[in-house]
Amino acid sequence: MADEPIKPDPYREASRICDRRIRRLALEHIDHAKVNAHSGWITGRSVFDILKCTVGIDAPDDDSHMLALLRDLTIKGWVEERDTRETTAQTFGLDFLQFKITGKGISLVNYSIPADPDIYDLRHL
Image (cartoon, rainbow, N blue to C red; front, side, top):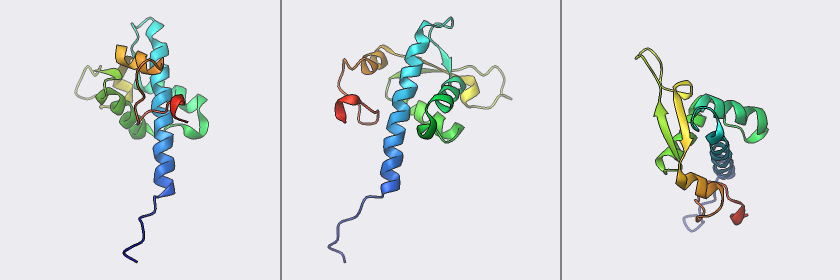
């Protein structure tokens, strides 16, 4: 029994693939926001609402799931994040965070730099 290889968890793999697609779609929607009246900044809530309305089954589960995926994009440098809370009574979350695509993020969306393994990419189907 010790010789048997560990079988991958199909649910975990499906969830990882879904998260890769959601990150890609979020990045594309943030990229589209660069032409808006707010100098390219879009709230996390707006990104979440757009994905919930358009994606369907691959949509983020809830606010904390969406926030985690957007923070992944921020940590990797694909987007900038801005906290817009004006008082300490306002809770940290999608409503008071804004995101803007970086030059590096634009390059990824346009497929002009190598793919990121955590973001869905048509070059790796």
